Image (cartoon, rainbow, N blue to C red; front, side, top):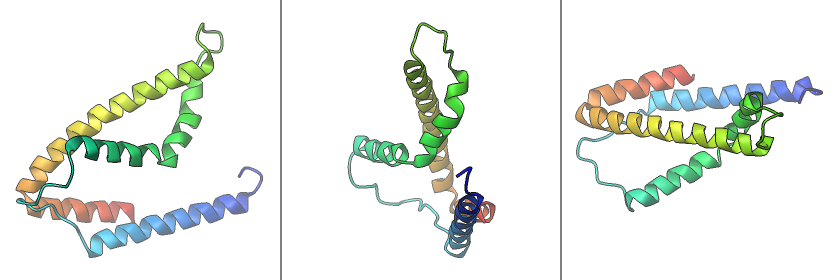
Length: 130
């Protein structure tokens, strides 16, 4: 990419257009949780595994790790650099899991109780994306 600025420009433009399309779609058709919505099919363990699989396949995670984690390694340490990166990655995953679980649980409770607030949050998210 560093040798071809045109490719980077095209990818940036396509990414920006895609985010605008998502934002406009959220504004046009906001989804709001229902107070008495049916429970999703499958156990919570299956839902957690599905969410972990979707998040694990997100290429942004690998780019983040590639860009950020090496600067926190020590080449002179007793551990190999690969081991250090794995531990740092696991710490990141554990902290994200704790934060997202708390945010998701709190948001579900608040937004199910207040459908008007849920629509406002969805519209704000759509505006922020576009």
